[in-house]
Amino acid sequence: MTLPVTTAPHFGAGGGSPYATALRSGGGVLRMVDHDGVHGAPVELARFLAAADDADRTVLVRAEGAVLDIGCGPGRMVRAAIVAGHLSLGIDVAAAAVAHAHAQGLPVLHRSVFDPVPREGEWGTALLLDGNVGIGGNPTLLLARCAELVRPGGLVCVEAHPDPRRDRGFRATLIDHEGRASLPFPWYEIGLNGLRRRAQDAGLQVEETWSQDERVFALLVR
Image (cartoon, rainbow, N blue to C red):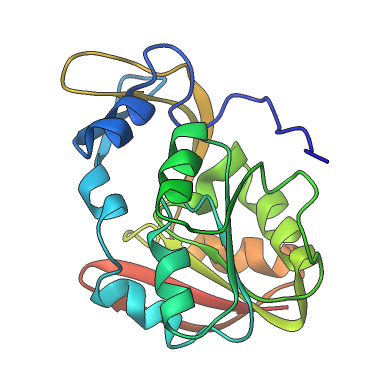
């Protein structure tokens, strides 16, 4: 039985579908623009489509048990977790990303983290990388959902914004170099300072933080 996928606006969907177009064409750089017209960091699809890098591997060496990659995109971390010996599953709301992962034979489901997920409460580690702590525009709600998905003592690994003071929600639009734009969707950027507070509110405790190649991570424990 196929479960319904959440239909709320999400990362790069609708409009000119720049995210889907970039995935199908094998890469490209998108820009995330907020509702005030402020341009954020570029979204480099080549990294999503490439193999896991050194920073990604610092996450996997800390992972325990079965790994759930939330907002997995084309599936690089799903593949890397399997290679590292973990049972792994990815979930994503972008049909193009799921299709790309399926073409590689990767176990990825087309659904939202807020929809029913297999093995709820049993995952050893949940991943929120590549800014995916912004999913839904409410980090506390998202982290609380992650706490439901992992087992007692389970881990949630979050990639935080490099600026520890960043703590802002906004409506974002993805735009590519040809001007194709997505529909607006809720998003959030949060650094370590705010993440610590939100984690506690969600029933999680920060066990460790680290950085690698200008990326910042936090390991949370249920």
